[in-house]
Image: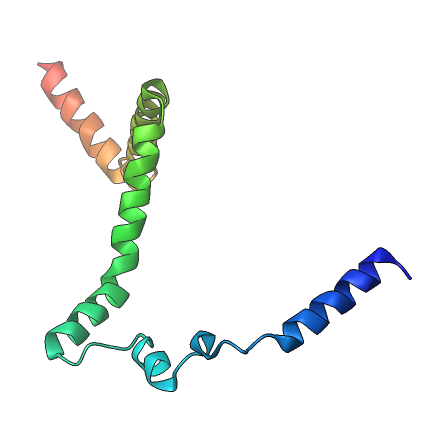
Length: 120
């Protein structure tokens, strides 16, 4: 016989002769008291609803703050400069769109005004 098999059989025999430990069994009353449940008060329910509704935003905000603390200062500065440059490019693009350009009638009126005032 192998030593592993003999050791297993010896352990089974010795464990069978020992008295069973009843203290290890969990009492049903104790088991029920350990169950987590909602608080009975109205305030507790309000707090839980608030956490469900807004808690993920707070957690996301805390994680973002932690990331910013761990981040290098130069990376944050580069990111801010890039955002400012993108905003400037976007504003310039909006100013150059066709909606903001003068129409043909406006150009003709402007030319007419120039001719009148520069003629004298």
